[in-house]
Amino acid sequence: MKKIVLLAAVLNCSFFFVFGQEELSTPFKDCNIKGSTTIYDYQAKKWISSDIEDSHKGTLPASTFKIINTLIALETAVVKNENEIINWPGATDTIKYGYRPDIYHDMSMKKAFKTSAGWVYVELAKKIGKKKYKRYLEASNYGNADLSISDDDFWNFGGLAISPANQIAILIGVYEETLPFKKTSFQVLKDMMVEEHTADYTLRTKTGWTREGGKDTGWWVGYLERGDNVYFFATRLIKNRADKNSEFGACRKEITKNILRQLKML
Image 1 (cartoon, one colour):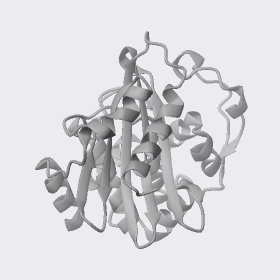
Image 2 (cartoon, helix red, strand yellow):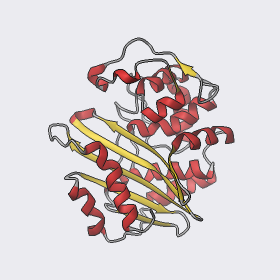
Image 3 (cartoon, one colour):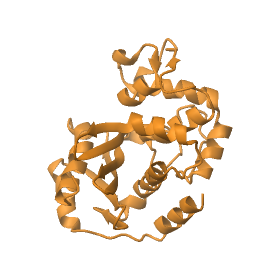
């Protein structure tokens, strides 16, 4: 717990190492989108950001919340393991979430994490309850821990907010296993987060996208294990929903990977 508190204190002090901000902003211009990418070089203990100010602004975490949500679900034994099947409730609000018939069926938490099937985690949230959530979020220094909205989906709607820098603090806690959860829960989560695994690196990630407040807020967060180093990242894109950009979802990953390549991390 001391490590988590210390890291949070460092983040609040805004100690960042800035690398060529102009060059790092180019991928955002290429995608015609505003946002930021924040990176932490674990071995060098250096912070790199395309926009330091934005890296400290909190917004809804959207589906990136599934990272800590998975740990909480396992810790509270709401699910026994990642393969336990959660029953489809029979309906969902397609106005809030869009129409995705491919996910409207019984599903495991592991599958829901990979496909970002939000309804599964909403069903788990109903069983966990906000009192338990509040305790774990505060113990983990997760965002502002604001769960005041009546909706069970408080990570896509309401006042819960986390900054890109804080996202990385949580990811470091996952990697180091210093957050207040069991080792077995971390192992399940880490396996679920694997997006790419090659002879040279392992990439663990989670996307997020919410349409709250007339804005599209898109995330891609995770960490890259390569050689004897780890690079943590959090990219967040924000645009008005009225501004059409068909590449918004794809740009979350495209921008991040371009920047990681620029920095010779990927």
